[in-house]
Amino acid sequence: MKKNVLIIGAGGVARVVAHKCARNNDLLGDIHIASRTVEKCEAIVASVREKKALKVAGRFKAHALDAMDPEATKALIEKTGARIVINVGSPFLNMSVLSACIDTGAAYIDTAIHEDPMKICETPPWYANYEWKRREECEKAGITAILGAGFDPGVVNAYARLAYDEYFDSIESVDIVDINAGSHGRYFATNFDPEINFREFTGKVWSWQEGEWTSNSMFEIGKEWDLPVVGTQKAYLTGHDEVHSLSHVLKIPTVRFWMGFGEHYINVFTVLKNLGLLSEQPVRTAEGQEVVPLKLVKAVLPDPGSLAPDYAGKTCIGDFVRGMKDGRQRELFIYNVADHEEAYKEVGSQGISYTAGVPATAAAMLIASGEWDVGKMANVEELLPRPFLSLLNRIGLPTRIRDEKGDRALTFQSAVQHTRAPGEGRKAAIVGADRARRFG
Ligand code: NDP
Image (cartoon, rainbow, N blue to C red; front, side, top):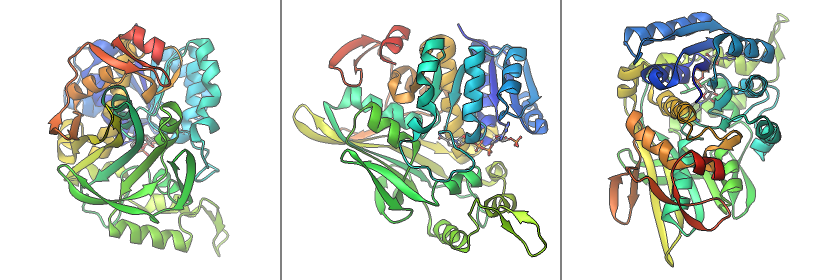
């Protein structure tokens, strides 16, 4: 059984992970948090102590780390005795942190696909550009590496797998819709690192439609979605990590990702982009100073973590799934609604960080319990969804479904489910570590 956790990063998501790990330290053991700026880690440790979040007495320590350095990361894993590393730092760190995990035998979890700081809007197949190149290495070394275990990617992948296993005989399309209907009250801010946020949208956006990659420009295709709680919301077709893995693993012909944006965001984004202020290429000022416009914009925008105290409203994120069941066409929506103010009250972060940090903690708990300790690299849809969704119901992100029977909460009490390994026939299976090993 794996114990002792090292959290990498000290942003909004890391804060959530830290609080949730503390609340489950009877299972997870010692908790360590490391980032470039140790003061940020210390502030998180202090907030965990202030809220008396540690479930049982145990270690919770802050460390300074440049996680771009695999040797330093390896040394910290060894020093802390961590057997599970939750990488919720910037996506630039994935490959170096993964290397450190492979070398030390620790399990690895992240919540976003790897990015090369010098490349913007890389073309698909994204996971195959970096992470999947190291699949064999993980399998040979018996390393559990769970990719994209946030909300999207993450929980939406588990929703797709649940639909695939239990609600459809065949799936035509999955449309993932991510709406943040909350408001932070600032003139303009991004909900997570502005650099990462803008990089997603400055080039082409890619979707998987009828078995092939299709490209559009950002904000070219918008669609109104009728959603529970947050009402009718406009969302725009964009590229996202899980479009690649879901289309590849579950062989779904059409996988699209839609993200909600208000007119104000689009206007500001368009002005910044057209002025060249979102460029990662350095420019020289008249005084001879070299400046990267994107980094300058990041420096003047609010720190996403600072938005939390004033954030109000809800998020609604889920999968519209269409396909056939028992010879009939069917469509349903599996989703979660999260509340910014409740997230802040509980862990001091806004709802977007909450929806990403809670699933990463759940993944760590499932590795600790053995259910997801699969000894190889896996995207979330390759793992059994029920233990994950059941745990999320319990620790803060309940799953709901809207289908022809109405809108209701989903519970996951049954120990037996019908499950198909992607590409195999339908079979009954006991949920547990054996299943996860066979099909994960
Ligand atoms: P933040 O930008 O708030 O935090 C990133 C953290 O990474 C900072 O604390 C920063 O450290 C740390 N960091 C950056 N470089 C290094 C380095 N070289 N060594 C050590 N630490 C480093 O991001 P968020 O908390 O908002 O997001 C964290 C991750 O979660 C990102 O990868 C993001 O893409 C992902 N995410 C995933 C979602 C999902 O649903 N799947 C949703 C939201 C986010 P410091 O401050 O000390 O400089």
